[in-house]
Length: 225
Image (tube, rainbow, N blue to C red; front, side):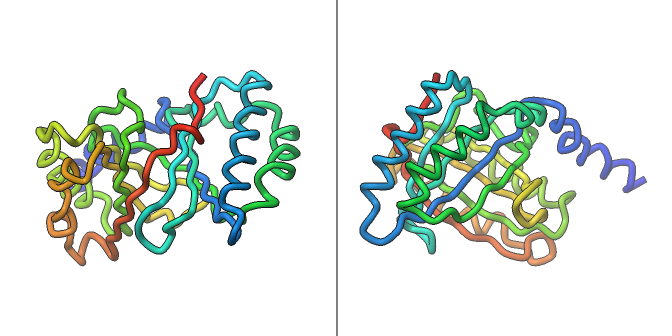
C-alpha cells in the first residue's frame, strides 16, 4: 500500500518533465580585477542574443552571500526539454562567448533543474525580485522531502513580501539528489519569515545537508524579448 501512495506523491515530479518546467542555470566566476570587463562583455553577449533573434528570456544575478559571493549566475527557465534541441545559433553562441565572456571570467557550472510545481507557488511571476534566497538541499528521501518542503511553502505563502517560492530538482550537471528552493523578495525585511527555514526542514533522515545563499537580481545583465 505504501508503494501506491509513494507513487501518487512522486508522480507530479515525473509528469512535470513533459511540461515547460525545465530550467538551465550557469555560473561564472569573474577573474580578479576583471569584474567590470566581464559585465561589459556579458552585456555584449546579451546583445548577440538579441541580434540573433533569441526568443528565450535570460535572468542574471550576483551572489552576495555564501562561498560564491561575487560570482554571477544566469538562467533561462520555463522550457520544455525539446527546447534545448533548438537553441539559437549554437556555434555562434560559443564563438561570441569566447570573445566576450571567457576572457574575463572562469566558467564554473551549467546545470539543468526540473521545477516541482506541486511544492511551489506563484510560478507565473518569474524571478525578477530584488533578492532571491537559494536554499540547497541534499535529499535522502524524495517522498518525505516533499512533505517538509510543502510545510515551508505553506508557511510562506501568506506572507505578502514573499513574491514566489519555486522548488527545483537537479536533473543534469549536478548531484541528482540536490533540490533547490528559490524564494523571492524585494527587501531584507520581506525576507525575515525565511530566517528559520532550516529548522522546518532539518531532519537528518530526509536531508543530508542544507545550505543557503542570497543573490541580487541584475536587471542590466538580463534580457527578456
